[in-house]
Image 1 (cartoon, rainbow, N blue to C red):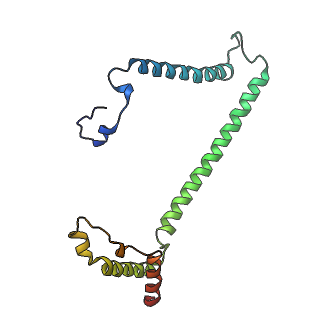
Image 2 (image 1 turned 45 degrees about the vertical axis):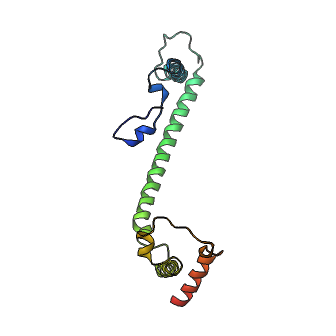
Length: 170
């Protein structure tokens, strides 16, 4: 794959052999499969519509020579029409209700305890400062940092810090 110079960086990572130069066997094979798939899909649709919707009495060689075929088609037409209308109403109703609930309830009420969150934030800031140094120094002056075995966290160390700090602050 050859990298192309382009304003959009994602174009450098897109590779499709169908649209590149050459690859004639691939192009012919994919075009033929696409045409055959469309024919396989369109023939039954044409056959059904020509016998039911576009019915002509002069048409010879009808696959459905008895009226039960048309009755069955009409039944499914009405059934699927009603089902589509009912499902559309239900879908729109649920969407409107979900949007209303999200707008008026979810965004207004905090799902978490803010006081507990701030207490935990302070606890972890103090812990990091004591363990690794001041925040400004950690974020701005260090480009490469190796954690020594003494600075590794114990199992459940953060949970212990949270519970101890919450007990003292809350």
